[in-house]
Length: 427
Image (cartoon, rainbow, N blue to C red; front, side, top):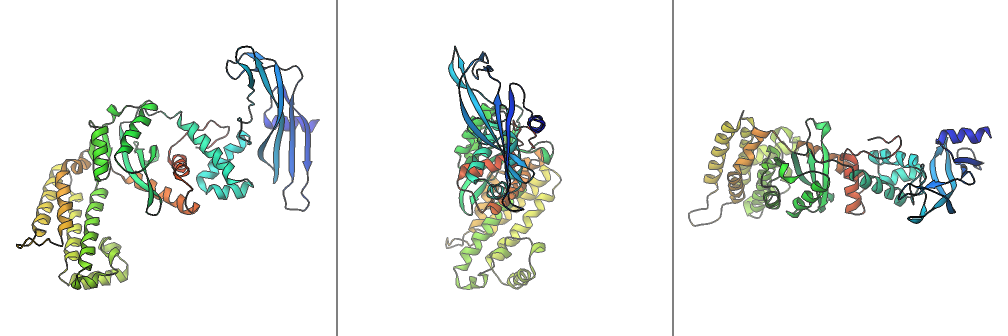
């Protein structure tokens, strides 16, 4: 009986619950897992609260339920109990909730509190191997607690958000992330994740924000890329917010234009020398590999539109050295004027190979205010880009996720700063 009380104290059992049997089945060989089964029961004549109204009711009947618990040393541990159903005069027969496990889980809360921090550090399939459980059961646990924790998220104080997309698989199935930057980088949190990267993601964010006590009218800043879909979504959904396009997104726009120039030039005879040099033109000179630097020096001596476009991109860096919005406007205006003049169509109306650079300069001119807001607001996408790298590393370790729902769950788990309603849960 002393062992019964020892286990009861370790489990935190309270009256009327107690342990009636302790059974241990040893492993057949050293190093293998045995099984510890603890059988719980309640005192005869006990009464239990109705889960609907909390009125204390007599027992109607019982059913035997078993839960997987945390291991006992290296051995598997399970709890088994007769779970009563209360006969409530108001609500009828209702299942009684036990304090060590949630209905239908098959795991104790302490076991689930172990699963969540492990799932943050490694793929769920790896957690399943370590715990000797099926990963489908563990995914159900992770999804339940992430969804449950999100019901308690408070967004009433959200005033800024950074928006970006990340891919569920290489080149496929994008999801959009809305992140609150916070006063310090470690305070950033994922507010909302939704499939797609079109303008409708903003309306879905608005609905989720309001469901969590926030108001779209109170959002005063949004940082995002310069895609037409995001611009349209932000304008329609949060017209009072100041839009910021930070240096990363502007540089990305121009880098994509440089790559488009390269692809156009490769199609010409004189552009054959550019084949296989794509990544040379997507990096700054100081980041080139020795082989790429040799290509850069050799090709820079040729009269190539790609080289001109690349030097345009490098000159754009002068904008980010400006000390304020006024100085940046002057430098950026000169840069746009230079690119526009250099990329004019020929006199015979033949399109210039630098036409993609011209379109990029036009886009920058049209959204000058949002670009200069970087100097006024100092809001950047650096936080979300850093978080994206963590998400993609997790995706790579897991070798992808089965569907968008599991991918979104992992993003919330890693970046949502969720508070789980679990004993000994880590955040």
